[in-house]
Length: 127
Image (tube, rainbow, N blue to C red; front, top):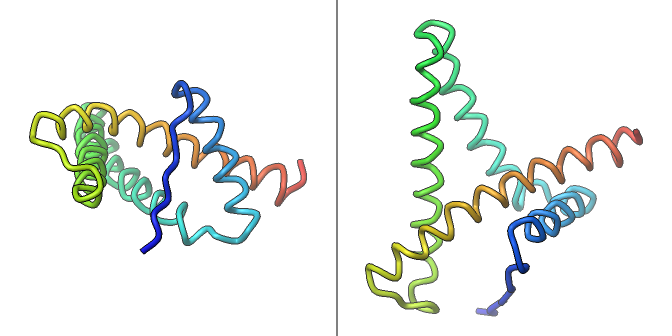
C-alpha cells in the first residue's frame, strides 16, 4: 500500500525529456512489459484502424483520429477514477483535470516512443 508521489516538470518539454530517459532506461532494464508494451499495443490497434484508408480514402483517417482521441480521454478517465480517493474532486474539477491529463498523456506516449527508439538505435544496434 505504498504511495509514490512525483511532480511534473516545469513545462511539457522538460516532462517529455524526462520520460524519454525513463523509457530508454526501462528498456535497458528489461522492463518492456511493465510500461511500453501496453502503449505500443494500443497504437498498433490504432494503426490497424487506419488501414481502411486504402479502401475508403484519406477521410478515413478522421475515424482513426477520433479513436485516438477517445483512447486518450478514456485513459484520463481511468487515471482520475483510480485516484479518486487520494485526490477527490467534483465533476467540474475532474473535467479540468481531463484538460490537463489528455495533453500530458499524449506527451508521455510520444516520450515513450522516442525513448524506446533511442534504446533500439543507440543501445541495441549501437548506432
